[in-house]
Length: 70
Image (cartoon, rainbow, N blue to C red; front, side, top):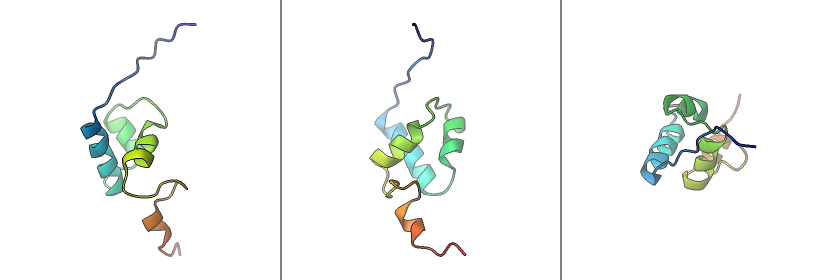
């Protein structure tokens, strides 16, 4: 079976820029996917886990988990 999906290569600098925008709260990871035309559903999330400064392992950044959710 041949796939017509083209795999994109992104530079490390680009990945860091996207991660910084998301972690700064400027955009969500889904908005980043649309803004930069990133096809993979989990690509930005993988970048957040690999290159981010926050702990995203539970889906919520560690720093935000310490705030009251009231």
